[in-house]
Image (cartoon, rainbow, N blue to C red; front, side):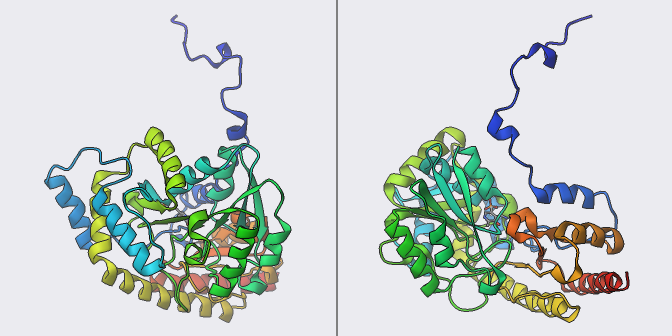
Length: 399
Ligand code: PMP
């Protein structure tokens, strides 16, 4: 019999690097593997728009292929898209970047985040980030051999970052502060005054700030302010943004980073060797999104706003305390009054009533006592889900 060349017994070293072996798999994924085995589930779990990409944007992607635009672009992305991005960031976020060397088009904000962290972090450097947070943050830091340092945010502050709590986390190894407002999973935003205090701390401690503003167009109250626009911040900030949420383009995989030339140049090296360039088709579609997508984007935001109001009112009616989130498309109700842990709540709710929500600790330990619910679902599904959750909560009281 032929010897199997892949027989693992012939390999004497561990097959996988220690820091990757120790990395936990996303808590969301495990839970949704279970959801996918069940029928008739209303899922409030996924974090993506329920809209199809607006037609003119899709058409631009199709037209790009029809024209035969099937080659690589410049590593940084097409100059036409970079110009449009820099105009958009200047007009809506009040920060000026040069399309020639201060902007890079990436494979979603996911890649922008990865190359930003890899470009900035030396082994052992501490990266401070707010928790509860997007599941990728601590993992990205670990993959770059950095040390993740969560800074908790609390319901009493509307999940905004308290400058004094941030201050208490700073050490001589602190290198990067990673922010995400509006926030996944809490929907929290930061006021200008709040951001000014954070900026002061960043300058005082010579931190580089990575600001992930992927949900910024989905701001329902007040005006979104970017920390990059505050005095003294532009040259120590990397601004990350993309098309996935505001333009309903998750599957196109296109995002970008803007920042001072020196950092973008370093990110470009990682990008060049790992990725080459973002998809040409997606870049041409993204160009159309920025040129002509604003009306569709505003319509989608207004639709999310209605569904947000519907969901928050529903939770409070059935006795689960829920803050009114000011941005993104998630609510983060407290389930503490039920006496169950977040994971027990999510699993029992799924079995009893077939509604899927994400346990808060998937976004960090301080998410215990909460669950994340995405309202990018139809109004009918939201109404039905609230009814089912209400029935489940009432049944717990009879136990
Ligand atoms: N940042 C945050 C806060 C997110 O919630 C997500 C997606 N859920 C991303 C980044 C990644 O988005 P993209 O599709 O642009 O890679």
